[in-house]
Image (cartoon, rainbow, N blue to C red):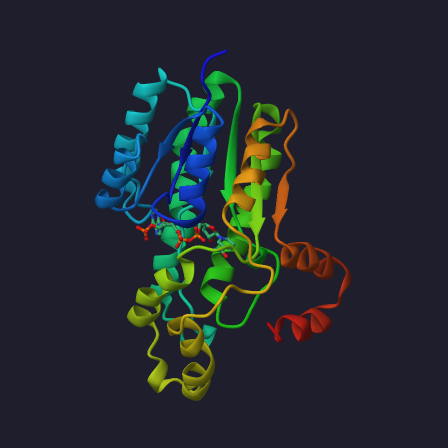
Length: 276
Ligand SMILES: NC(=O)c1ccc[n+]([C@@H]2O[C@H](COP(=O)([O-])OP(=O)(O)OC[C@H]3O[C@@H](n4cnc5c(N)ncnc54)[C@H](OP(=O)(O)O)[C@@H]3O)[C@@H](O)[C@H]2O)c1
């Protein structure tokens, strides 16, 4: 049987980095894409083919895909859309530019890359498109409005695509991690600093006492936090199972919130998540 192939974005750290290693250990041909050239070079030194893909620069997609298809002879078995960032801040303080920026990275870029991959998968009659969503695509949390909005939109777009692709042999799968060890919090700081004028916010005190404390202080792991390998295990099932699940929950908070959002009235769910 010929070697299976996967393109993974956001491989510089966290979930993407672990997924690249996990899929290679499984014997797959892994294209471990990074946003920055320096990280592509680092991943190449680890033996990966590492095209540069920046969701905020769609001109990077075609050369990256060309590199992938040249190496595989024109096929791609799986795409793992993973690279993303957070932009913490109260919704009332989010300039629309901040939303445009995060939507390009976390949704529009994923969408355009997926659109460019679909013809390849259609031609081969099969494929798996795996989207790294979040428990924050199922329920919301204070300060996470921008990120929440991108993941909720991803849920809607991916659910629609899955239904539409039923006649193609292409499966669309969502992975829903809760707290996972990675650089996501640290990587959100430049976006917070670029966009949120917190000192002039009506919530300046809350930023000082709550959000900034959480962002800038080195805290231990969150309750129920798991290593990225917990996501990789679900990714492996998603791309190898004969009949993959449409959604894979990762971490206890996802199971709890995934259930509560179905059974609780909105006000009751609001009360619970406002404690988070
Ligand atoms: N960690 C969690 O608790 C958690 C929970 C639920 C879902 N997730 C999801 O898991 C995925 C991976 O995040 P992570 O936790 O592993 O965080 P991470 O360590 O911060 O990794 C994020 C990756 O995304 C890349 N990225 C950022 N902007 C990008 C862009 N414009 N184009 C392409 N790649 C970009 C980053 O590249 P640079 O290094 O160049 O910035 C990095 O490689 C994300 O989709 C995130 O929403 C994470």
